[in-house]
Amino acid sequence: MVSSFLSTLHNSLLSRIFGQASAIELIKKKAEIFDNLTYKEYVKNTPGSYFSLFFNEAFTKGEMFFAFLFHIISIIFPIISILATIFYINPLIGAFVLGFILLWTVFPAFFRKFFSKKIQEQLNSLENFNEEFNKKLAKFEAFLFFNKIHLLKKILKPTARNASFGQKSYRFWDEFNNNINLSIRKLFLILTDLSIILLGIYYKNSAQTIVVLVTINSANQLFINDFNTLIVLMINYLSLKSQFRKSKLNEKSAKKILNFQSFNEKIDLISIENLNFNYQDKLVLKDVNLKIIKGKKYLLQGENGAGKSTFLKILMGIERDYTGKITFNSRDLKSISDENIITNISYLDNNPCLIEGDLDQNISFYSKYEARKIEDLINLINLAKLKGKILINYCEKSDLSVGQKQLINFASHLIETKPILILDEAFSNLDKTNSQNLLAWLLKQNITLFFIFHNLDQNLISKFDFQLNFSKNQILVS
Image (tube, rainbow, N blue to C red; front, side):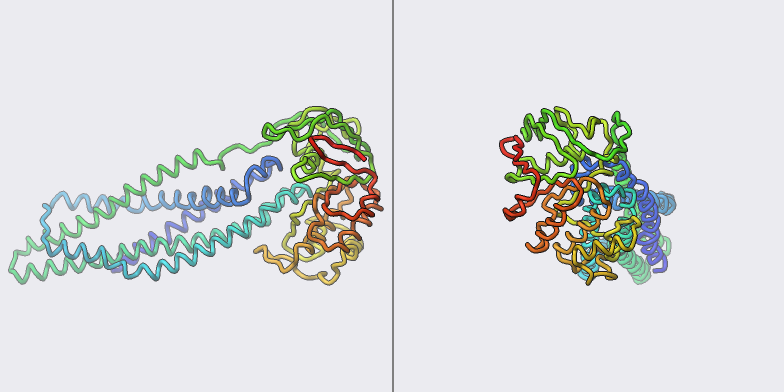
């Protein structure tokens, strides 16, 4: 019984601790893929895909990989000793022993309900970590556009840590379930041996016969169990080793080396000549000629899918596979790096990004600004009632409405005072009064504004310097 308990503890806990520690180190190393990930490369996959990549490829398989290795080493010695013993005996086990084998195979089923409930609880917990990780990873765009991408790993770390403990708990109960069943089988094996001894004494068999029967029964069953375990572990170990070699986590994610030149100027003029762009063999923009003048306000109008967001992504350097020529001042856009573009352009869409912390921390977004500047923006968005409150915790839980989140996100971009501001449905969840007041304020600022918003009042439309109408792959200026 002591041996069975130690075996259960070893198989379900010690090997998993070894595996978990190694897997966590693997995740830390592989998280570096975000450092060199461009926006265009990032959006090829969903946040859920990245969660799966890390916690299936790196953690789950990584933990199993290292645990298998540890487990294989731990069972080699009992296999050798059992194998040495069995060479000295001849198999002869009666119907009574067979009956006990069937009994100890069926008996563990009574424990399944309890362990199944425990395992399901751990699986539900892991689902919550999945959702939390996805929400945090969805902030990639904001961290990229704020030029704070190196901090993304910091907010992912608590979730990864909690998920690792969740995985450990799940694995413990899963393995404990399997190993307690094995221990029960070993208990029945002892009872079988005891029965053989008693029957042997009752029928006056020789001591040598009884010893042979007990040895055969014990050695045969233990050897079969451990030998089968070894074969399964070896197959899984080799399979996981092969999977790791082919895993996406081993792919090099370094950015393409482009002929970028230093660009530290403020953008006064954007010139677009004969711009053409295709997306998946579908023509989106054709022969576009346009000049974007510093300080002017541009309203982008057109049906969904007409190319408004695509046009803005081209200006931001996200989409570079266009033909024609675009220059910032006199510099070709294709020669300007993403980082230099981001220093000039703020981009907001309808998916606001909040970070763990209070209102001031969310507006400053990991940077330092004067308290007065933050206070002015809080008054502008009319959210002074939230000052000092934690807006979102590390589990991504928040009581804020989407509209409030959009206001805070708006303020966090304004504080950077970049010369060009892009609002792509960024006011979609604001009430009419708030959206009109903020837009009226923006129209008075000395910035270049690109604004996408449906159902805008005519009196506000008339206040824009230019309307860019997207229709039939063209941009018509009015």
